[in-house]
Length: 247
Image (tube, rainbow, N blue to C red; front, side):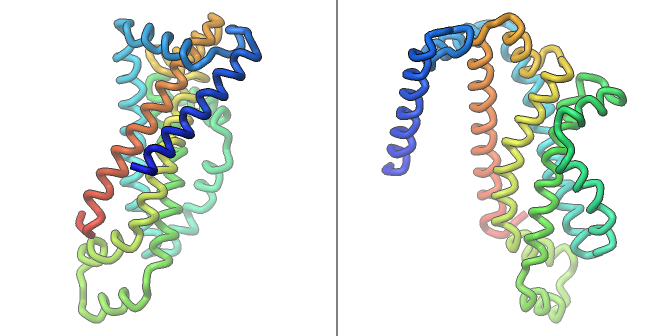
């Protein structure tokens, strides 16, 4: 309860700072306050297209996030088992981590349709996060436990289930949290740059062109809320699934 009250206090503090700064600027074409943003959010939620826009972006971003998690876990495991694979993947993954999202979007526009753009961008931005975190966790596993598993002839599945997964549990949680925000930011940026219709990114661009700063802030808050909600949901599910060492 104390921690929740502290969070509520700091939230109110920054909302107050936001409102004061808005009053100092005193120009709704540049900055709108929290109350005005809430009003625009209510207007957006009343539109018939609102749920369709949320569904369009959420399905693509979350499905890419899930795929990146699963493939990151698989590739990290095989890279741990076979160092040659780790060396083989090092160069392309370094490129993915270094390449700006805008450049990546423009490149993929030549090969993909606009509708699947956010899926691929979110995937390639979050996959390295999962892969490198999981691989680092596997490399830091207790050697004594691994030797014991080898001595008692644990099957590969039992090693994966009872040793590898519990051993990288902290990395699973940290990477899941980090990758969720990155998936949403990169996915929405891809929709905006690629002008993907019926998406949150397109709504942001349309609001900016129309000089509807209230809508820009409203869609931004909605995106943040979605990211935080799904981050909480994923962490809750991961703790339920993996905290007891079961998969």
